[in-house]
Amino acid sequence: MKCDLCEEKATVFYTQVTNGKMKKTALCESCAQKQGVTDPNGLLMADQLMGMPLAQKVAETPDFLKEGAAAVCPSCQFSLEDYRKVGRLGCGDCYLAFGAEIEQRLSTLHKGLEHSGRAPSGLLELELKRSLIDRLNNDLEKAIASEDYEAAATIRDELQLATKNLSEEESQL
Amino acid sequence: MMRFSTLLKHPSDWMTGHDAETSVVVTSRVRLARNLKCVPFPGWAKKGRRGEVFSHLKGLLQELPVMSEGFAHELSDLDSLQKQVLVERHLISREQAARSEGSGSVVNRKQTLSLMINEEDHLRIQAIRPSLQLHEAYELALSVDKFLEDKIDYAFHPKWGFLTACPTNLGTGMRASSMLHLPGLVLSDQIGQVLKGIGKLGLAVRGLYGEGTESLGNLYQISNQSTLGESETQILSRLTKVIGDVARYELQARAKLLEDDPLMVQDHIGRATGILTFARIITSKEALTHLSMLRLGSDLGILPESLLEICDRLFMETQPAHLQWRAGRKLPPDIRDAMRAQMIREQLQPALPAAINISDSEK
Image (cartoon, rainbow over all chains, first blue to last red; front, side):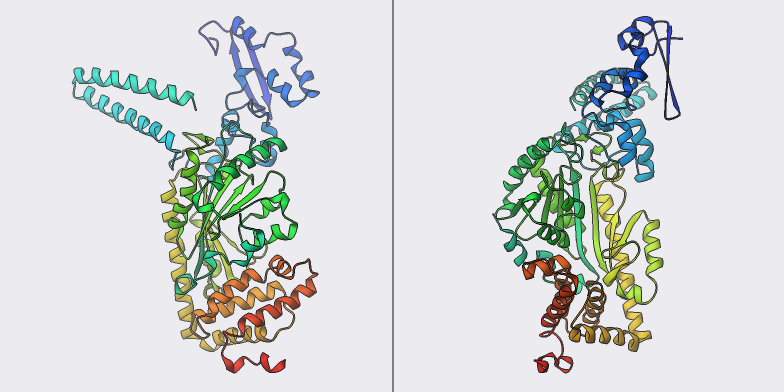
């Protein structure tokens, strides 16, 4: 079995049960150390969590557990427990921190799962870039289907540039 | 800046000019929920941070040309009666009235735009128009939205749209609604069916006054429930179509009632007129019920047309906080009921036919 974070062989297995849901993670020795899983203090996490203010709990939550299912929002310290209790969130970043859980609820609340309305003006360009990528993808498929490999190569280069462009902008969001 | 008393002396723009257009769909309202990037939502932000957001947004909003000579106040500057008046005017929400420090309201002179700062979200932009004008109300709200988006960074995610404190508003952040007067559907016992049908279309419907399913004054509010997955225009068009259909059913029901049982309709309207013209003590619940019949009578041509606008004004001005504000002090319910009866009599007098206007002779 390979490490979840790199290509090395996994030797450390971490299982966490939260509210009856099990989350398994496999790590290699060095990644485990980086994440603080093999830290002797890490093993006493349960004890430590009990008597600690929220802000410190965040630091104790290994990064790899945070994506979409964090216990506490790293930006505003609002907790997933609070969300479950009040149905409200602490800040915009909570949507990223608790994304997995929020998404489950969205389908019962809304007609769709993705925004198709207006975007603030600066983000309109982003939309245009995204639709450009869609169009290029289509063109590429067509070019390949018609065996026009010269055109396909040109489109592929354009596509790579457009994708790079977009991901740079998205990372700034 | 406009004072609270000036704000209240003027009826809202959408409360005047009522005619056949507003006989069923009284008002249309669009609300956009917006938040600042990287700032905790009002319910979770610390007091100091909330104050910063309030000052920042209030400053920006007052730069809006439409807000010149508008009203801008932190809710903690207002007493509980003043806040309640704003709630009755639909200028702030009940939830916001409960908040105080760092929460505020900015309203333009015509009261067509009401901006709530630090309610559940950092900003709620609300636009109100008379009759079925959801698209127009949206354009008005959008003008404020566009003005702001160049000046502040909104909390926005490409996949989820505008990020809101509650996931029920996620995406467009838009809640559009219309207020409808549906006495015909109620009298003909068709209202239950219609409300059920609206619910099946994924829209929300509730009584404007009263708790739960009870609706006083036959006033109902229809709004969109879903805010994610459809564009603003799609939501508004769907809602406009459904509301237009309901308005047509209502007019058909009124016509049919008048054809099938004119005596019953006239009796309802006549009794309501009698009570409102002669009562000396009237609760707000009873007033709403009878004013609704008067409004229907005016629509059907049984009573003078000018009554329509008077009824709509009385719907609001006979509410408890409006009455007390007019009196200049807090009043116990029994005094309010007497004041309400007097106010209704005085306002109806000039509009009602002389034959039943005998209140002059009593004096």
